[in-house]
Length: 512
Image (cartoon, rainbow, N blue to C red; front, side, top):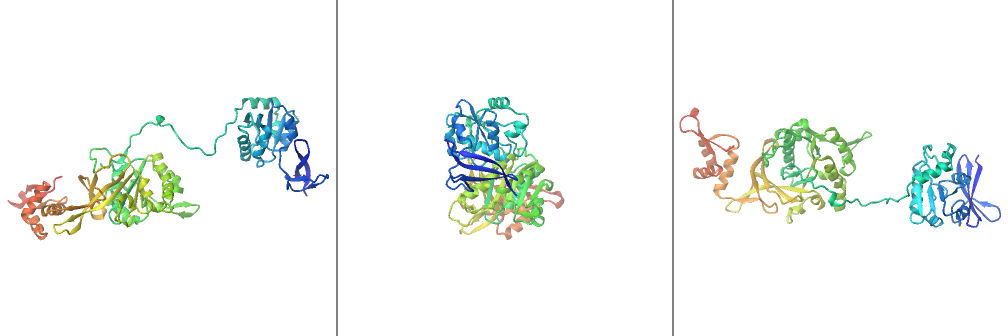
């Protein structure tokens, strides 16, 4: 059964008893108020709380430090040594209206050695800053962990001279706001040259987006980019620029890894030893999808295992942002950790996504979902299939595709690139750069000679064919000899004569 072991009287400025804080054994506290007739009621209804030993505080010298403790026992022990000490009671009991009693005073706060004590000391010091003439928070050495206080310190050999010496060595408290605006003076920032994974196309330390309709070749293009990164093969638009080898982490939501992704990477010549297929998050046996906003530090851990990583791919990126993809603010918040990650780990991040169905607006506004999907990345590229239009106005797709810049925040928009997709998803790049706006129809009005050029280039590929076979197959495609000779001149076809096939047998091949 609990019994009262100590009572602490709280009075007004004249010394009239207002209420008591009562300690029981086992250690618990309850508060009670006086009814004015020597009896107590176990509640504080209608009683305004105040400071412990308030009357003594108000009578003390304003030239001496007032010590604020976290409990009545500590205040009593300090007062017994000739010091002025008070408390509001517990670690959560401080009230802003108590500050008026310390106007112009020197104040020293003595917190308990725990998190609650630190919070109490900060609440008191913040409240008194600008009211008291000076506030100091003194951390007493050698206190027990988990709540050691000034009474423990005194029991362990502490005394008034040592306490005053510690007070003298402690700097005045300066409040630190809970919230700060991060800022820097730009004259202190050293300009940084933008580096590229793929020159002009994919910058390092940033997010790049490639967007297109389904089936236009985004994933095949990503596999080809992976091949260039993992093998160090020079980029098609920078044949004379060294390309350091590195690893690629792929978050692949849509493709079957064994049946589609691996064969496609092989077709493009990727080094599979440097390709990491990233999956779900596993936590305490539970499996859940990777979420950029909440799981970015797990991606950091994965990078630590593969420190040579230069590129991270999300296909499609919308599957890895667990937010409302149509909300501008939510998409921006979800992508922010990814931007910080790219800069922190010096990697390029490539996100693939789809177009919406609004065909009557510019491509910059056609990324599926919120406008933020194209506003947040520094580079946005789109894929369009080249079309031909004959003299009668009939359009048809060619095998050629364009990779065209939709947005570039790093300078002028770079020229586009032309490529085609062969067997197994193998990407073949053209050396020719194109200057086409993605918002225009990607069509070419061709004459019959232009059509013959397209046919002959596709027909020859990387093979060497006899002129006889070309004329025969070209005839079936409705191209006469004169058209084929004109196309040969346009393509700068190389011809050679073989002695193994008799006199007059000529071979045509595209220039290397």
